[in-house]
Image (tube, rainbow, N blue to C red; front, side, top):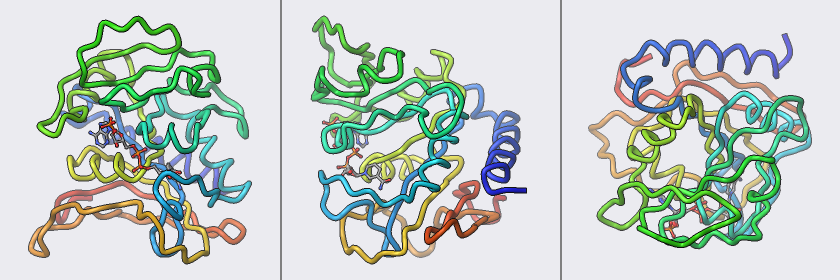
Length: 240
Ligand SMILES: NC(=O)c1ccc[n+]([C@@H]2O[C@H](COP(=O)([O-])OP(=O)(O)OC[C@H]3O[C@@H](n4cnc5c(N)ncnc54)[C@H](OP(=O)(O)O)[C@@H]3O)[C@@H](O)[C@H]2O)c1
C-alpha cells in the first residue's frame, strides 16, 4: 500500500474512534499538520516564510486538506505566508478556510479570502460592528489574555457543521492547541535540515512528573529526503 493510502486509512480509523468519544458531540476532530526541520523549527524567524516540504510531501498536505471539512491557521501565518490553503496538488474539495484573529488584523486582500470559492471565516474575540465584505466575522469568547478561546471556537465550528479540522500552524496556534489538549492527530513532515529557528512547539507548562503528549502508535516513512511522521495524539499516560 502506498504512503498516501496508508495515511488516508489511518486517518479514517482514528476519526472513527473519535466519533465514538464524548468530545465528538462538542467539537471537530483536530489534525495538526506542519513541516519542521530536524531541530523542530517551522521557519528561520517568526514572520518569515520558509519552504520546508518537498513536492511529494506537499502532495500529502493537499491530500489531507481534501479529507477535512475545515482548515485553520493563526493570523501570524496569514500575515507572513499569505497562504491559499486550497487543494491543488491532489483531487478533492478544498476545506472551509478559518483564521484565528483576536485583534482583527486580517487583510482584506489575503489570498485566503479569494482562493477556495468559500468565504473565509475569521474567528475573533472582539465585538465588532464592522461590515466586512471579504470574509465572515465570527465572535467567540476571549481568554484572559484577550485571544480567541479555542474550546469555544471549536464548539462554534462544530455547530457550523465542521466535523474535521486541519490546523496548519503557526507555532503559537500549535502550542495553544496542545496546551488545551485539543489535538487528536498529527501529521508532520521532517525536513533533513538544522535551522535553529522558530520552533513549532513552545512552552507547554508541563512538569516532568506529568505525562507529555505522545504519538501512540507512532508511524513513519521516508519520502524522498523527508521523513513523514504521523499518529494519534495521547495526552494521558497509558492512553492509546
Ligand atoms: N513550516 C510550517 O509548516 C509552517 C506552518 C505555518 C506557519 N509557519 C510559520 O510560522 C510563523 C507564524 O507562526 P506564529 O506563531 O507567528 O503565528 P500563528 O500561530 O500563525 O498565529 C498566531 C496568532 O494567532 C492569534 N490567535 C488568536 N487566538 C489565539 C489563540 N487562542 N492561541 C494562539 N494564537 C491565537 C494571535 O494573534 P491575535 O492575538 O492578534 O489574534 C497570535 O499572535 C510564520 O513564520 C510561518 O511562516 C510554518
